[in-house]
Image 1: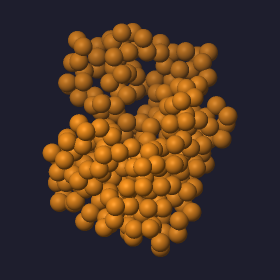
Image 2: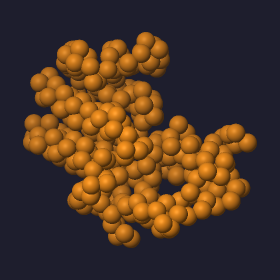
Image 3: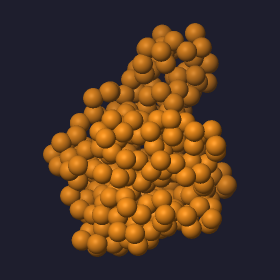
Image 4: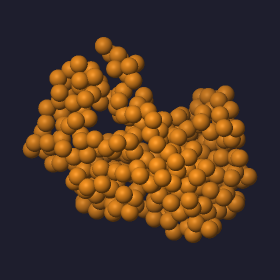
Length: 296
């Protein structure tokens, strides 16, 4: 099987690529720099140098993807600051422009299956209630910087009849593990610079990046056409999560900020992925010993 990947140099791509190559799949991908191209070629992938947001690269993508059975789109990011306009523009372009191009090219060259990374952070606040895949996205003005580009991207995919392209969307939780935001969280806790917003009772739905990668492998083999899945580990309250990290580091618990607005509570269920993809998280959400020992 030949698989085209967009986003192979990101943290998820670095976890997913070895899994696909180990299964004997032929992987074709795009990388921006000569160094990235060489590293991917040494790993065993077929690589074209370019940028998914560059029209010249888009014009060459049909040649790369022709003959591929599957396209996997895992390029994307979430802006760290809702006031960071350039980050918002970049996110919107990656989630909408590159998705549109990859879908159009996939249909044009005869790709049979399409897998798309999305995120659960677009859901609206649910308090202590479980969030399933049919739950609405957040439409409040302060959250549109995240939810709107996600919604636009997913709507573009849903507009394609599944009989024309066997598509599946995987909504991942907040990544944890090496090379994720969890490393920065540990650094801030060590420095005593992390504070929990509001009371800390809102739910997070994290997932280890390796577990997210195995979900893509599972979806490649088992996802029904036109399906969407939450890919998360067991949800945990924000305050409990950071208190546990502090305990692992043997540092004081972070303070709460009761006057700060409460982030949306997103207690996401992975039941559908467990049942239909036969997937389950195995890595857990807590940092490795090497992560805990950094900077000590």
